[in-house]
Length: 114
Image (cartoon, rainbow, N blue to C red; front, side, top):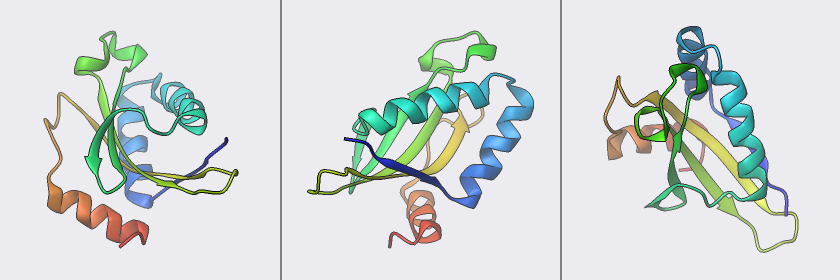
């Protein structure tokens, strides 16, 4: 099954900001996108179709533990064409330790999911 991918404007802003700091981020995100198209149920399940994925940033020269975090919403369909993965947030673990439930709710509203 293949899943369609989409982003929201705040994710694009976060990615652009972090890409200025980490040159490999675009390639790292492309690799993650390819992986999510094949298996969207990666990362930690936060409930309600929300998942938190640890992302290693190659140019940061550290592993997933101190890399970035990607928050996605996965909508699975019973049909054979898969579903949709919506990229909601991207943040550097060294800048922000976690994301609040209220922040996730605002991202879901921005994405038109709720």
